[in-house]
Length: 178
Image (cartoon, rainbow, N blue to C red; front, side):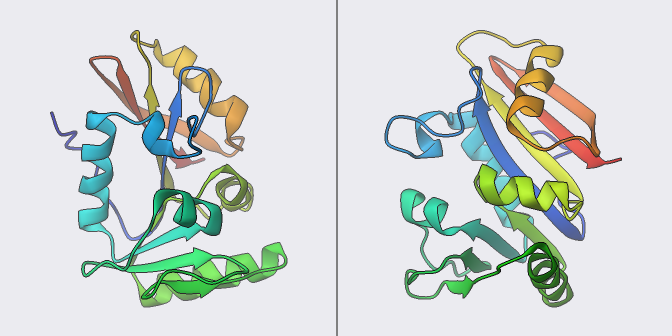
């Protein structure tokens, strides 16, 4: 059940989950509400390969991020973070690009688990090397439906869908910078 192409390369890789309506979080504000067992297994697989995780403050709070013994966790936030997490702030795209450059210099494989606000900024700036996007549905989605949902929610103008695989009712996709 594991996708052999879910492999992190050096650079910034993003992971994101959507449901068939384009929602990235459920009723509690957490992506756990829309995720499923398959999606969580692939998130764990990606995390096992990364050197550091990058996440937004709202996601960190909503998902209950804690210090990991496996990788460093960096949080974009203006407030406090949980113990062991590293706070980051930026006010413009130049600062954001510098942060990503510095983190990539320190950590070869950086995994973004940011929500759509920060992820869209990273995508628009062309900072994401590849995106693993999972579309979770009650019924099987066609790849063109998945692509339309993804493009409606994310800034994928400069990205191409390079790989996809349907497992049960979950569509796994890989997008690469064009």
